[in-house]
Image (cartoon, rainbow, N blue to C red; front, side, top):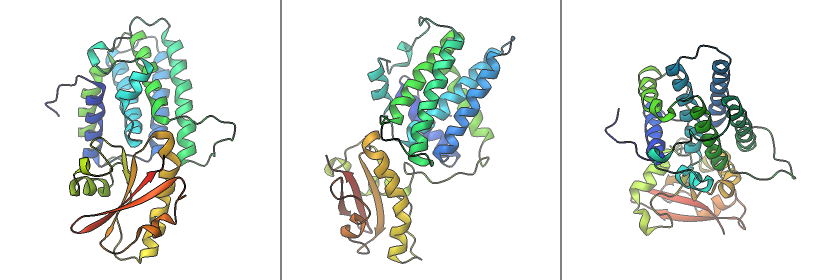
Length: 293
């Protein structure tokens, strides 16, 4: 599948991103969350089984790691940074948690508890459960990194090298899962992001290489301007809800040249909190929504 040698957690994050894009794109975040829950249930079933096949255990652990990393990718999470804040190394050969104290069941309970925190945040972003006024805002990226920490502890307690199974599982998935799932657009994979990155040298714009950018759905030339802007609004509001907490750098809207002005997009956001900047290429205009610090 790849000639890359996987040395760091970033390497795995990129490999998983490439694999899911090859399959057609990311699931909706709520669907991804449901799949994490499904895989955790299958791990619990293994815990209750007296005879555990090591390869089955490794495959299930790899599934949980892959799907949770997909969620991290969808929020443009830098897992290297989040791991560092937890005291986890980015280099794979240093990621040995076999000395951690605790039984497999103890670590699984911690894993399940953290999964609940991830679910709470994603339900706030993409579901129908608003955040309580008294509830502390948490980043889904940070919680997913903590989820990985508990997953590594759990795997070590089961004497399983988790990452050894990840690449083989991805290879199997590429052969098995092509066209298996109904895939939806996602802001990290929208064509507006790649068009903007290809059209501009990011070092000479407000963004730099490695920036965490979301993008809007493609412009529909068969619809009037206002209908397109209304179509964008759902994606804009989702970005507005996530941007500050997740540390996102910007949101890209791509339009035909001289079709829209910044003030028309500014109408959909709080001007005190977010700004709109217009930049042009030969064929398209790009509008960048950013948090005003």
